[in-house]
Length: 141
Image 1 (cartoon, rainbow, N blue to C red):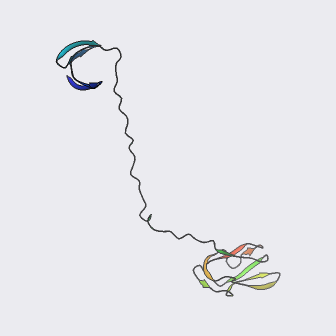
Image 2: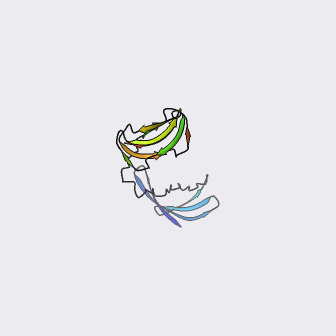
Image 3: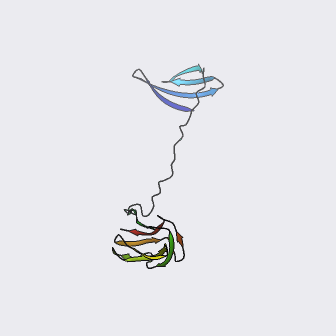
């Protein structure tokens, strides 16, 4: 049936299981036959293998991504109405460039750029009513 090799206290034993029925087994140890009784059944348990999916890395994982710096926010100094917008997203502006005109307290006011940079977003259109501290335009450095 099955052959085994055991080492007990430094001595080697060749064991062959000849027959096995119920709890009785006929075995041969180094050429001598023995009839033995099995007291407890030994069940073989297999340790499960942990199989993981391969890690998928995005194609652009090796590229260093530039983090967007917070944009400078041009805010409305007073409540009013937007009359005209002079810039669009992507336009380059310098300090002192005119961004828009809005009416507040029956006066037309020019809103000038306080920073140099690129227009990231324009939050208003002509005719919009704005409150004090509403964001009108964002300028990226």
